[in-house]
Amino acid sequence: MAHQKTPVLALVGGFLGAGKTTLILHAAGLLRARGLRVAVITNDQDSGLVDTKLAEAREFSTREVGGGCFCCRFSDLMEAAAQLLEYQPDVIFAEPVGSCVDISATIMQPLKAYHRDAYRLAPYTVLIDPELARRVYRDEADPDVGFLFQKQIAEADMLCAAKIDRYSSLPELPMPFDFGISALTGQGVDEWLAEVLHSTRVAGARLLDVDYGRYAEAEAALGWLNLHADVELSEALSPGSLAGPVLDRLDQLLTEAGIVIAHLKIFDQAASGYIKAGICANGDEPSPDGDLTASPERRHEIVINLRAIGDPERLQRMVEETLARVNGTVTVRHVGAFRPAAPKPEHRFGTITQALD
Ligand SMILES: Nc1nc2c(ncn2[C@@H]2O[C@H](COP(=O)(O)OP(=O)(O)OP(=O)(O)O)[C@@H](O)[C@H]2O)c(=O)[nH]1
Ligand SMILES: [Mg+2]
Image 1 (cartoon, rainbow, N blue to C red):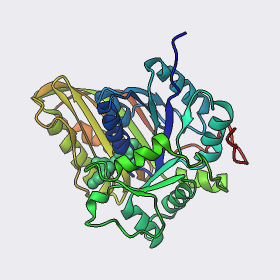
Image 2: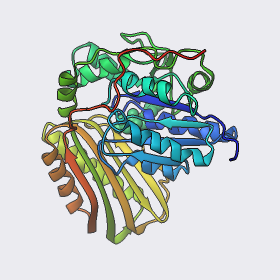
Image 3: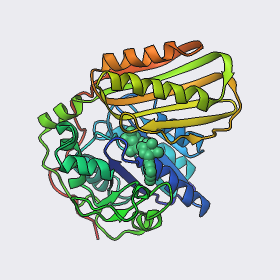
C-alpha cells in the first residue's frame, strides 16, 4: 500500500453565520497556494447544502454528512473522512452544524480514543460573530440562541472573533478570545492556521455540562429549510440577477412576517458561472461570492438554505411563494422543512481522553 501521510483534522464550529465556511475556504485556498492538499467535510440536519456547493465550486475534495449533526452521525463523519484519504489530503476541515454543541464530548474525545493513528486532531476552533456576542451578553439575543452560543464558546480550544474587518480595531468582547480573524482581508488567518497545523495545545481540552432537554428545546426553536431546484428561465439571466432578487424578496417576506433570520443563503450555478449570497440578519446587505460577470443563461441549479426563528411550514410557503415569481419553470429536486430533532449522539464521553505521550 502507498505510504499515507497522517492528515490534520480540524473542526471549525460556531453559531449559524459566524463565518465558518468563509474561513475554511479562505484558509484552504492559502494552503493550496502553499502546495498542500485540502479536503472539506460539511454537515447538516438535512441534505442539499449551499456550503457543499461552494466548496465544490472552489474545487476542494468535499464530502457532505447529512441527515444529522456530526455528533449524531459520528460514523458517517468518519466514513466521509476515510473516503477523503483517497485524495491524500494534508488537512481536512470539518464544519459542524451551526446549532451544534457538545462537540468535545461527542466528537473530539471519540476521535482521540478511536482514531488517533489516522488523524492529527487540531484544537477545536469556535468562531464568534462579535455582534452576536454583544447581543447575547446584553440579553438582546433570542434566549435559545443565547443558550447555544454560550455552550459553544465554553468548549472551544481556540476561540476566534470573526469578521474583524468590520471594526477599526480589535472588537471589545465580553469574553477573552485567542485570535481576531477576517476571512475577507486575511487578517489573523496565518496565526490561527499555524495553531491549527502545529499547535501544542491539547485538542478537546474542555468538556461541557449539557442538559440535553434544554439543548433539544433550544435547537427546536429554529426553523430549518433546505431547497434544491432546477430552474429553466423564459429569458436568460446571470446567476447574480436570478439569485439576488430571490434573496431580497425572501428577506422582505420574512421581515414582514416578523421572522428573525439566523442565516439565509442561496447558491446559483449556471453553465457560465456561480453565485453564492447570504444574510445573517433581516435587512442585511448580502456580499455575493462568485462570478458577478457570468453571462446570462436560461438553465440554473439553485440551492436555498434558511435557518430562522419561525415555523418551518411558513418558511417553506415563503420560499415557494418567492420562487413562484421566477419567470420560468422551477423543478424542485429536494425540499426539507423541519425543526431539528432532539440530538442523540453516537458517543458521549464523560472524561477527557488523554494523549498517549
Ligand atoms: N465582513 C466579513 N464578513 C464575513 C467574514 N466571514 C464571513 N462573512 C460573512 O458572514 C456570512 C456568513 O458566513 P458563513 O461563512 O457562511 O458562515 P457559517 O458560519 O459557515 O454559517 P452556517 O454554515 O450557516 O452555520 C456570509 O455572508 C459571509 O460573507 C469576514 O471575515 N468578514
Ligand atoms: Mg457554513
